[in-house]
Length: 578
Image (cartoon, rainbow, N blue to C red; front, side, top):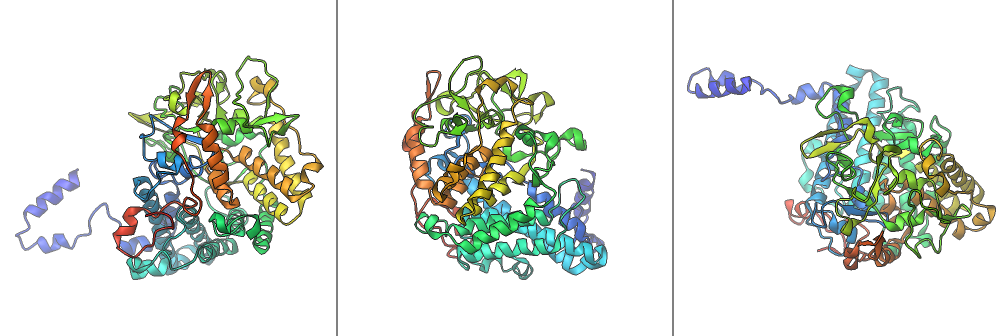
């Protein structure tokens, strides 16, 4: 405030000859461009910082799209009009106008802008200020970060403008069309970003887990190739009939780098989602967070993407979004320890603590879904009840567990807001191994794929006593026998099931369904059954009677309205949307 008062006083004396001296003074609170570019390491840090510049209206982890848009999750909150995310879960009313889509587009391009500025700083002063080796490494890191934001944009919107450093330096943003490149060409550009990172980054970076390394770049290269290996993203050109085997071979090549690296499966599935294990060997790359007690700031570097997702009545500001579906709970059913592929959803079932039942469940259910009568995030002093649901007649009684810490560890909130110091995994080791298994199956290498999947199931079987001993009598899980991997079709079913159970509520489910070309079948069947959900006599989910997923339209989200008309006729809308 003092400096503001001084400037006001000086402005009032502007008739004096000395006013020219005042005008030539650099403003405070603004970084001089030349000074900023002369500090390349700080510009790189700013690009990293943008990874966590998220908010519930533009969550960079994409949970309203990857989870709400799938059969894993209901929106939650105070009703269907609470936030603009309701169209994302029923699809039939989705248009280009929600502000959430516009903000996500804008904020991801802000991140790209930081990357372009960092690359400019590194080009001009990197070797001079950092030395050749470090400058090359930082350049690789920025290419990784820029590729990350472009991957998110391409995943969401398909037709996007490619704004690189040359466009930035020429200030030609408003001349770059979003249909300049095809979908595959855009992916090749993104792949180029991660190749630049892969070729210049070391395998290990001793920094506590925050910086990208060669292994993380390899994971992203595998993800890119896996995505385009299945086709063009629209169901008419996606699926088993469109598989590109050369791309699948690339997936195996790059996942081998991760497989042979310093990363590995964390021994207990539950530990993966506790803050004290957030940079464990399971974490190949993650957006870093902190609590206010760790860095002595007002809020810490919290995860604001998930600020709505705390359980109602459990936290001071738990807004009860991100609610697991009955379909997801049913998917964890087992018979003789194996999934009930064909009959899992034929009846509504759920475990109740203290109630004897013959139905058994995959242990990962109790690490993923909070349910009435069970401890919240493993803590018996914080028991969930049916009162821990904000709008049960709309969204039911389940709550998400992976994106919150344990309640006993305290909370960060002020007024109506709260956030958690939970890292957002970009890649965890198991995710990458499931990508490897997927590619192996499509290339006919079924035995190795079975070994990977059974290793993951073995970890789940060993993840009972430490955290969920209270649910031990409900749990039964077994490895897949050889007969389940006797042909591609059955092996593929096992892989897809395993990926759902392992990665549930981690924002990937819808994008998996789209990649495989089966989204319309799965989602429209889901809408038909989920509208009849019931828990202890309370019906919910009836709004799904208005839901419908339209192939050749809904595969991608629409280019936001504000972006289409910021420069009229520059951008083209995705097909099927007005």
